[in-house]
Image (cartoon, rainbow, N blue to C red):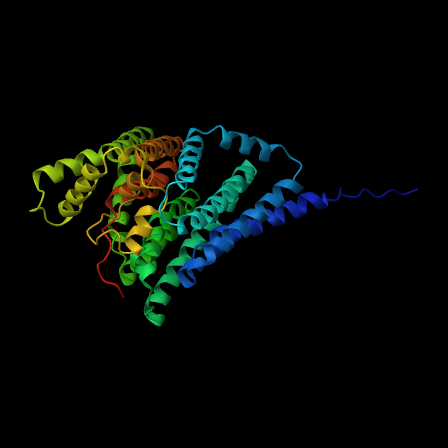
Length: 371
């Protein structure tokens, strides 16, 4: 009697898990990057959908990689620091003088928690292969940014203008994400494509008129060159620098207020005004005015146009010394973690992380225009 050997059939659950994983990564890397350029609020829809696909993939998968990855994520010091920052932001809603920040906090916190959980549940051995989709998403975002700028000539509301301008914000995000995108290509030997992706990003940022994008790209290039071959030492230096900027910024503001109370110009004018606010707030500087107080205060006209727009100012004004300490811990620990990545990939990651961290203290003040 003749017997036929049959190849064991793939587990349907594993096949479905791989498909959902691919769809989720595609949603997060390819769709979610260019979509907010076309429609601002889509990020709050696409990120949860992509994260839900990754969570469904983890549920269907039977291997232990996902659980181990999630446990490693929960044990990570940057995650604990971020949880402390989020917890204090939630507590500060008790004394914030506006109603709008509560809804924004709930939406942002839920979205980021879902995405973080989904990222932690991704099987470790599939992460590298799916990084192919990141440069595709960055390239699509660059094309979308150029098209929106040239074809639509969009007009924005006051809320958009106070939020640095959607195209400017998109250009800055693109300038930060292009570095890990180029790294995903470079580790596979596709240096020409990596260079083309960088050139497309520069072109898109120039055409979009993003004020912070080109400095971020140049800062990323400097960090990449400095970290090449010495990523860990560069990440340690960056961690100390970022923590120092966040924690010592109020002292610099007070010094500017004392030295140039009325004669300061340009950047120092905004810094001196912050120093005046600190001197007037007193003990309130320790607790802050509540999550969203800076943004809603500028939007409602309660804060003047010379109010700084940097993340460091917003953290100190909203969350006080506790929030600033948590932010400093997040930036420092995350910098150290990035420096421990694969030697071939770490310089690219630092190229994106360094300007992302420094942009916390270099954002420009809001425009005084109201249209």
